[in-house]
Length: 208
Ligand code: TMP
Image (cartoon, rainbow, N blue to C red; front, side, top):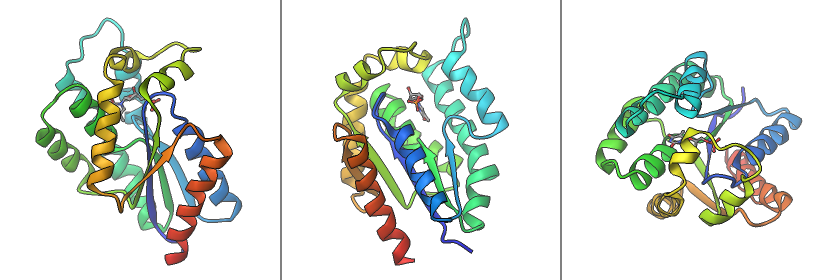
């Protein structure tokens, strides 16, 4: 059986985390390390439907509190249906966004009460915390420019005024738990970022 490890990727729009999550998954697969790649919101049949609602829902009102609960509904299902069972099977689970996204966007970004957000996150995750969280750190403006060539989803449109607060939120979270977070400068080349992440993951895997 493999070694279970829970790794999450975080960052603002256009930071390249999805590309890096895929690169890490590919590397592990090439080395025959049992791994699973998933994402938020989504990753389950229910989560995919919630994702479609929160990202592309048109002509429906979604209040900030509702949005918080929808992200966490998707998350609760993902934890129960995919993440916990996979960790139990000894897999390395890689998740593109997790509870820290909600803390960064819904609390630091949108201003929902931090304690409330954290306690709802905690309920949805059953207290599960990542072993490693990789923050691909990018200045807010840079990320938005990178994504300019395609249509922004509903979250991106609404979040457009708050990327600076989201980034500061991530920095606070990372500073509060430096053992769990690896902050990587997303302005480095793609290959360089992949290398930095791999060094860290390899060390964690060899610790066994
Ligand atoms: P992504 O494709 O960049 O991962 O987009 C997901 C969008 O959803 C992004 O704008 C951030 C937002 N989001 C939240 O606001 N809270 C959350 O908990 C999650 C998972 C995503």
